[in-house]
Image (tube, rainbow, N blue to C red; front, top):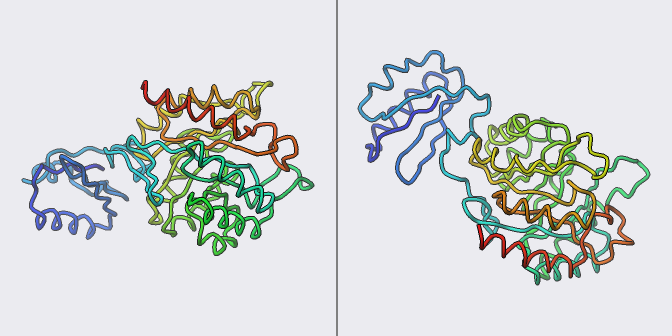
Length: 332
């Protein structure tokens, strides 16, 4: 249930109303906008008399929400959420590019790539320390050692870092990570989602390769319901009948998610296509579709990359793309 309060409501009366709802055993999510305050009631609202609430002096309107996701719902929170990572902002008109290699391979490699992508305009460094791979014989990442190399790259360049968490047991290792990524394979690992919901840092949540938008939003709800409202949604392609690309990039998800939710939405054209030459046009299309950012794989030697070299741009290719992205953003 959503309750919109009238502008300029007395703080004491607002608190009395919130306390009354809490006495009913309901959770109350307060969203303070530029024009009005919206109260989102979470729980069994069948006991709430809508007509009685609507008759209150401080209440402007009351409506029930049919969607099962509440906290990430734009009806609960009409204004865009802006995620801050140091000086970088994502959402609400702020655009950020995350770039770097699929996997951290050495200190020298990650530092070199970090310097290159920063020079080209990336605001955040991406790199995998823990790598979920389809084959148990493929490179699984440097794990804790990789995290240390990412931290060195951060010290060298000042770029915040985003990297993937695969297991609850590894959470203590991620204390110095700026954004924790939950990958497509773990999008519905509900125990993991609940645990990162207890952390005080942004979570980049990737859509599963066969999941609906509603399922993505429900996964975001798991994180937010546990106290962490700093969630970034990521469209990274879904599995379809296409046999020429790794996945199918669902760009319609960007405006649809913006309509349904107040959370920032970014796009990963690298994993969506799996082919380096297709990354630039899809990145530009995602920008034009209204994405709040991009996460792009960049490697200084894709031919010898230990993971996903085929979809990685060279630093000079990324620099060219970054310039085109800025041009598209200027136009739209």
